Length: 321
Image 1 (cartoon, rainbow, N blue to C red):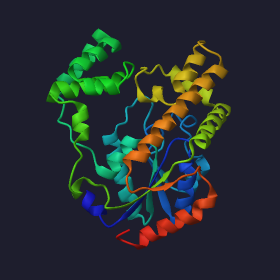
Image 2: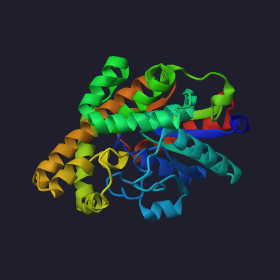
Image 3: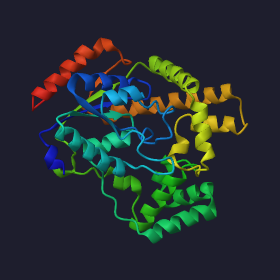
Image 4: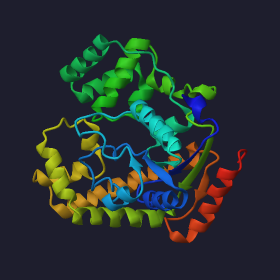
């Protein structure tokens, strides 16, 4: 599929949570007849409108938005699933004469889009079932310890509470005799693995203090906009605790509040701290994992639209940009 896109442009807009990516993407889409394609692993879930800061309904009507709220809370998204869906949306945008804008802060998704996914040997269904049975038998802590003896690299990257990824690491080792980390480090080569040949990557990287202030303020706004009710509905669905949607920023803390474990103000404080920590890790990733990106070292502001629009125009007009 990649050869179909080799001469067609795509703009990628990345950055940490609360930096203003969605607002910038909306402005770019309006100026350049763009289609916004979500690259946030939590914004794909329809039950998390508030806590993922999904674009407003009016904006999604005004400008085409794709891959927002397309999975139910009980489903598990993956980089491979997302990459396939994103490729289709890029093709659809180009076919309709629109500029694809891939927007999000999930590093694994963006890395997959820019470089492709390293192949992993197929895992037999029986091996997957055995890994899940072992997790149920041992429990998460003992399973994590067992994984550490086989695959210390992956065990060091994962917490005992991350059941899904622990099982994945175990089953890959069991099926291939090789760490999932080693598979992931096998960067694919050749044009066939790339989604596009002409990609402009814009990254918003605000000053840490500005970003943290924005994170705190946005979470308070989410609570005022109905985040507690959103989590109440999620909890009422009786979903397993290890599903991705149950780990979204703010969900664990507000769920504990709803269970009577802590007052709302404490849950808010803990959720804000978790959000700041996540934003810090995202900043580190964007600084080191996206070489060649055009970095805007500021929180979103209309004041730099003129500069960004000029960069995009040059990109669209110059094949060797």
